[in-house]
Length: 108
Length: 119
Image (cartoon, each protein chain N blue to C red):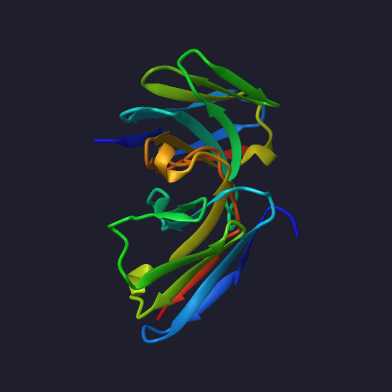
């Protein structure tokens, strides 16, 4: 069965304390893995697409990596403005499946 | 207007009402989507239109009826809803393959959502 599991469900970090969010997946015919950021009361904002194992993408303090079974979103020296829910999604033929997200809170 | 817009932002309706949600994308994309977001649940893909063809989602109740008159506009018509339909309804758009090519299913750009409350 196709599914996406994100962990942890919630994460509290001190400003500057680096950490990683996990997205594990099972999907037949993976076409891509996507990371989004969602702020309260807003729609998700696209961050990264990863297509194949070993691929990495970076944007400011965020770095996304992909293996055959999971993806990590590494957050280096986070700031309070990085607080949000981070969503992972995978696409296959005629399917687009989201995980339930990781709620990140960065304390000043 | 830029990006993806949705109206109204908030909607309260009774179970016997009929209402419509509207979405417009200004990104020149060829695919549009409706999602339902409920607390503690993953985003649920309801409908996809690609090159104005609709991908059916058999798990969506018939009280939700989508309409895509062109690649920039998408509607979700609501009638005789239930309280459990209360949720955030999100519209998104993307650029990609048509349905015959396996669907567009790539990076998507979302609107701000409509917060729906069914009494």
